[in-house]
Structures are given as C-alpha cells and as structure tokens.
Length: 318
Ligand SMILES: [Zn+2]
Image (cartoon, rainbow, N blue to C red; front, top):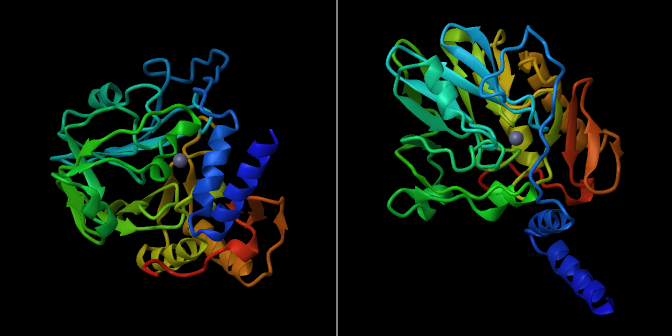
C-alpha cells in the first residue's frame, strides 16, 4: 500500500511538471472505477415524443436540417443531419450506444459523409461505419495517417472512461480549414474552433444562418481542462468566430441542458463566452472547487478549467 502511494506521488510529481499532466489526471480519473457502460435514462410514456430505435429522437430545425438527439444517454448528445440537393452530412454520431446510420438513412436518400466535430468518444459513433468520412486537415493528424488510416489517440478519444473502444477510420476527405463543402444548393464552411480539443471544428451554414458548434459551445458545462483542451485556444476561437459569423446566426451545439430541447443559442452566448474567458485570464473571475475548477461565465455557461496557475493562454500554433 505504502509503495503504491509512493508510486502515485512520484507519478503525480512527474505528471505535474510534465506538459501532459492532464493526460495523467485523465488516466487517474478513468482508473478511479469509471469505464463502465452508461446506464440509459428512461422517460414516462409521452405521445408527443417519437422514439426511433427506442433511443433517438429527431427535431426538424429547418429544410434539410435535423437534430438527432440521444435523450437516454446521460451526456444528452445532439447530432446533426445537414442535407443539400446532392449530398448529406452527418455532423457527429454520438457515442455509438446505438447505430445512428439507419436513422439517418430513414431521413435522406442522398450519399452521406460523416464528419466528427472532434474525436471524443461521445461524438465519433464508436464502431459505427460510414463509407465516407471527412476529417479536418490538420498537420498533426495528417502526419499520423498512413494510407489515410487514422485512429484517435487515447487522450483524443477518452472512451475508456465509459468502456467505448477506439475506432479507426479510412479518411475519404481531408477538410481544409476555411474550405466550403458543397452539398448542392447549400454550402458549409469548415471553421477551426480549438479550445475543448485541438481537433475541434465547427460547420458554418452562412446561407441558413446556422453554426454547428460541436462541443466548442453549447449551454451548460464546457470542458476546458481535458488532455488536449486549452483556455488560450478557447478564447482565440471565440474572437475568430465573432469576426466571421453573422449577428443573426443560430448556434447549434452538440449537448443540451434539457433532453428533448435542441440547444439553440444566439451570437450573444459567444460574446458572453469571450468576455467570461477574458475575465478568467485577467484574474477577475471567481473559481469554485479545487481541480478542476468551475467558472460561471453567464447564466447558462460554466467553464470547467484547470486552476489559474496551470492555465495556458497561448493562441493555437504555439
Ligand atoms: Zn461531447
């Protein structure tokens, strides 16, 4: 026992001084007895709710835009089907508790491309397979992909926390940052929005004033302390997005506060996020807890972060 405690202390010390200390914390968190499959939530019968596969519900947001939500899964994921006249995009596929593909194929006959907003296990659909998979073209990902085969790393995926295996993809398209995806009569722009993770993207549909923001922004607790999170990146992305998207844009995030309500936010939420982050950076925001700490950024937004002395405020690329 003594030896174990000593080993733990040594590991902590190494981890603390090492740049990747958050990976160590993530390991410790997973080892703490997590790793068990999640229990699914139940709901009282309600004729107003249509369940698909007894698991998903669908909210039609507008022509060719659907939120496919997972109210039974505790993280309340919202995945999006976005269609044009020629192609369809599935932006996130949940953790893979159920296969999302048959649900999507009920809603569209168009060829489907799957795009993960980032590589965390609750977005990449587990072992769910799509023929077409498009991934953001970032040098550190491209370097790792031999023959276009790409597997998220342990800390990019974190699926061990709930017992989800890491997938491997054959990437069919590398999405350049700032490039447009032509769906036929509809365009989506790939925006790089690191902060939650370094591989995070958002999709901007300027024609329909929609921003699909993944885990970068949604109402509730935002995660800024994970192994590849960065507060500096979070702030950088908020400035970048505010400079690019239009004022009347609706932000559609990948998690919700209420199981049956698609998380819709305005550009105001993005501004609140930016101002809140600036207050954290400048030491003007109050933190609660020890590690990680919580910052209440506004009524709906809480940033979970490392304590201030461990935060990095460098922009991406440094
Ligand atoms: Zn998530």
